[in-house]
Image 1 (cartoon, rainbow, N blue to C red):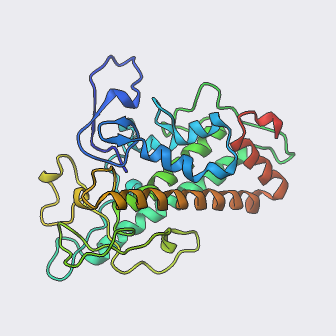
Image 2: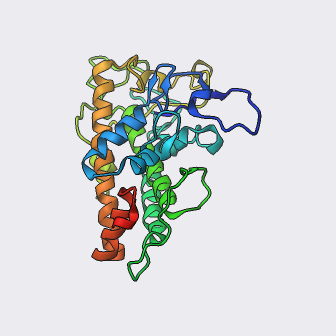
Image 3: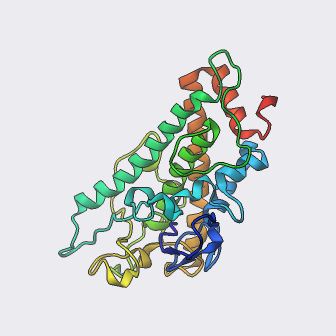
Length: 301
């Protein structure tokens, strides 16, 4: 779900570019409205968090809104330098059997495992950054999102920091369902151009906090740069495996299933994050942190 395939429109350095000022060069699970994308990351995040009672302004910072990246879209911002990061987008875990293949199964598993590690490293960072939301005496500390958060990788206001951390985690986890074969239906004759699907309609236990054995047959597509036809020769390309847009080669039902399962996973990961706040900071302080993150007016917590 990465808008890795964009180039920045030439503009004066003093102008802040919105997502709409960027031109995509290939399909990706979207962060913008247009160019074949329909703000998939925003929609997944809003759908996944709909039952948690977020205020509109706070949710807009985390999920994004038209004209902004939001925390979940930050990995697609070229300025962040994460567009080619395999861990940030769960790419590069490709292998195919039988026969020789340019990448070993062990390497493919290690690359996918780095994505899982990236997700929980960011959730752990969110728990750490939450310490500045509410003081040990339960007084509020750094809770403002006035004027919007920047999500540029530089630590600032605590609420913005927590949202950025969680946005990074959400983005990678959502990409997992688009860029891997977890939800894809089985293929009668799988090939490099039409890989086997694992046919799941619920989040991967392996990607949950409890973890599980690495799923047999799990892969994600190879992405090394644009145009994709110039890279990944003899490998399963991102282009044939992704469910990034409604025009995916895997079919429209796969796109909708990827969106749905990604939203389920987003919901589960936010619930896990809330449980970690309570476990680390105690029931009273943890609950107040959760309230501060959701409410547009933290003073009401």
